[in-house]
Image (cartoon, rainbow, N blue to C red; front, side, top):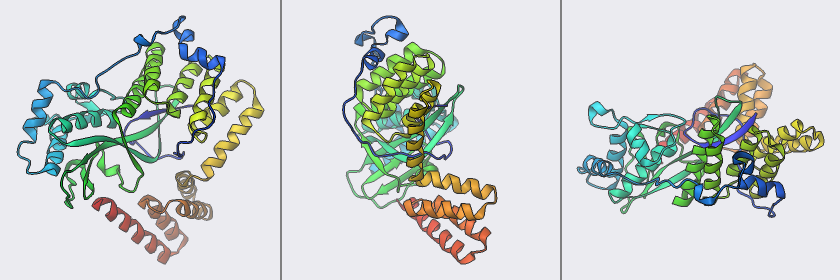
Length: 386
């Protein structure tokens, strides 16, 4: 299977890792140069003027009026943040937009408002654009969630990333807003998430500038075109994403596009380019291993398989999944081994402690199970309080 990165909301938990961004030496090759021209897809060199340019945060007059009207009764900025989110989410019968989640719903702010469907990136674009219009200091916030996979209609798996909105308040606030998926992350930030119940403040987070957001948007659209086998549009959107940001996952997706087209040497060159930006990108390493097997370069394939195995062993969420699987097969000694190993690497996620409690309970270690549940409850309370 080829692994593809897309930004959307969490669907389910899985078992691969997210690693720090690491840069290595510059990589180039004739195959890479050819891959960037688009000749293998268009049978000509693609002109840079052909790349898409969309207004991601633009608002229509109707959208501006909606944002202003629905927040006019707010007494302060945190109430503005909450009222805006509630208005976007509640049903049209109650005067809202009734926005619904759709994994392929990557749209600009205006597109989301028109269709009332969105994934977390599309919704965040809409919310941030409207929040800025009413005077809030809102930004797109990338959340480093445990790796999550979604299987598309083809033979590809999509690595789900996650973003939400963060509003910087002018005044300090200790109020916790849980209604409708709004939560104060700390005394000066409000986090707005399409699926707040899955958000945890303990996750590492990073505010993105609008250029980085552009890269995520064009990447997502490219992957949606790829699923529809519209390879020309997929290429154009990926090249536009790379103009904004040289993230390894965007290069990896370009490699997968060439794989789909049977251009294996071009796919290899692009995957290697991806590794020059992040040597520990599991999706790229996995794709290269499978690619080399297809090319009957078995020694290279084995090398990359070992790299994947090594990085997974260091990933607490991979160990967590192994523990769940062992528990399901009633292999309690193995389940205990994996969950204890996971907790040594990650002790800020209540789900790991809850699984440990279940495993200890099945082993007959009731005191250990109670201790794990208390730790899980403390973390859950911490997440709710921000």
